[in-house]
Amino acid sequence: MADLTHLDPTGAARMVDVAAKPVTQREATATGRITMSPEALAAIRGGSARKGDVIAVARIAGIMAAKRTSDLIPLCHPLPLTRVTLDLNLGEHDITATATCATDGKTGVEMEALSAVSVALLTIYDMAKAIDRGMTIEGIRLLAKRGGASGDWQAGMAIPPDPA
Image (cartoon, rainbow, N blue to C red):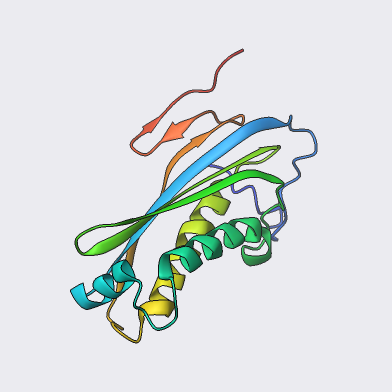
């Protein structure tokens, strides 16, 4: 089992010291989806949800969440994000959110990408719950990360760090 970096030798919680780490370009992509009734999806697709443009609001909510991740997740470092994208794709029975976050920093942006997806999907639920309270949020996961000492990673495979 890997060492738990957020615990000191006595077992107390701590924020990891990244002072000695080099600044590198880092990027992470996460995804998740929300399934819903045909009526809820039709209202979102047609722009007739009572609370307004669900997709536009969810996209902004996800981007805002990425920017505020250190306020939401204890012990996360505040990061100067250089880019956040959030795509919302409407399927036959669901909406898939995919977020990519980037920074030039000393620690990764996985939590920012995961937060963006989570809050975007929660926003969709909030805006469409009057139509379908049985919506299900599922499959929130990291798809890939790039940069840092641990190297690049993709779901299903680890890519060793570049020795250069």
